[in-house]
Structures are given as structure tokens and as C-alpha cells.
Length: 300
Image (cartoon, rainbow, N blue to C red; front, top):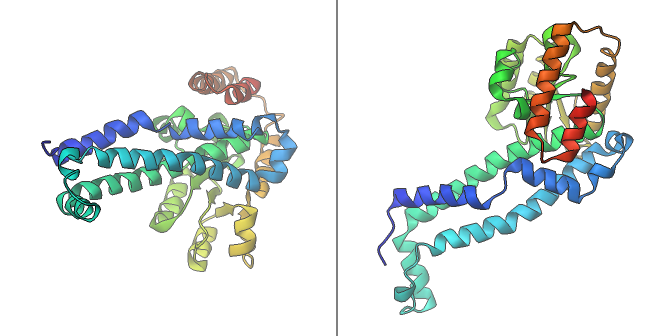
């Protein structure tokens, strides 16, 4: 069997990955329905958001892991010359494979790592979005509307969700809630205060599952009016002595309280048309997702 070219192998990894793995949003939505979250009342979301987020992430991870394992096995099998390997004993076969394909193994491992990292972020954004919807929080999502639209309206690339919506942000950015979702902060936390400065908003909520944020980073974010938000479990076990950390349940209360400020607002005809256009875009994108589609229809 002729050895596959390394560049061709890298392209093969990419092509097969796109075929085999579900898109992050699809995986999250499917597990949201599987956990019967679509049957829960708003109050349940408002009181149990933290637990729901962790359960949903765990459910997605348990479904993803065996798919990735099979994908990795299949991609490694492509490299093997079965006729030749059958002439070797187990130790000889392993040694031959390790010596013959180190760059190929590295590229596959690297691809898996990068894909996991990217997926984790997108899945987390989808989870936050669905939990907020379930809690009855009006919102517009960058994932639905598009990064270009968010940037055009001055929201910035780090804002994933705005509540009540983009129109309200344009009208009065001080009476909107901006949410940025990051599974872990690493060094990228520095981008969030910079981005918030560009929006001109009063504050931003940084939702994360990071369990090892230093006190220095937390203080810096707080001084920049970035409110770090996490699950109740993480807050109580990792940041028990820091009352500047919010739980998801507290964030939901803030969003709902803020939305009330707009209940008596009189929108112009032009503003109403803009809101309808934004909501229609999101309905169109979620034709296959009944729960999300119904959420936006109610907003209309």
C-alpha cells in the first residue's frame, strides 16, 4: 500500500470530521430535548440554571466522546498497510506504526485538540442561550444574527448575547445586558475589558466554567465592570470567599429585571420594523429547532 501524503492526510482529517461530527448547536439542542428541558417551566430554569448547564454539558460530552474515539481509530486505520502488518507480531506492528507515522499521529491529535476547544466554546454559547430562553429572558444572539451584524451595531466580537436585544442596545445601551461566554479564560480574558470599552456599555457579564481564575484577574475584571458569572457549584467550591462572583441564577434575575424597564417603552415604527427583521432572521435560522423558533415567535 502506498503511503498517503501528509498534506493529503490533513485534508482527509478535515473532510471526514465535517462529515461525521454533528454541529455543536445541533448536539446541544438534541441533548436539551433529550433531557426534557423543553418541557420545563420558566421558574424551573430560573431556580436551577446552574445544575441544568452542568447536566447539559455532561450529556453532550458523553455523546461526543465515543464518536471522537471511533473517528480517531478510523483515521489511524487509513495509514495501516494491513498486508504488511499481518506479517508482524503485536510489538513489531506497534513499533513500526510509531516510527513510520509520528507526524501523522501528531496532526490527528492536534486536529482533535483544536476541534474540541472550538466545539466546547460553541456548545457553551448554545447552552447559555437555551437556558436564558427557557428562563424567559428576551435576547438576540450573535450566533443567530452573525458577527458582522453585531460588529456593525457596535456590540463587538466578544458579546455573544444581548438582552433584551440589539434594537434596545442601539436605543439605550445602558439599559441592556451584554453577555460574553467563555468556557475557560486563559490569557484571553484581557480581550474582554478592551472589547467592553469599545461598546460603551455600563457593564458586561462574563459567563464561564473556569475553576482557576486568580484573585488578581477577578479584581481586574471587576474594576473594569466585568461581572464574572458561573455555576453555583463552582462559585461555592472555588470562589466561596469572593462575593463579586455571580451565579447563573443571579444573572437571570438581572436580565429579567432589566427587561422590565422596556415593558412600557414606545418604539417607533422604524424600530419595530428593525426588531421584526432581527427576530425573523433568527426564526429562519432555527426552522428545525421548534423550541427556539417558538421562543422568537412569542417575541414577535
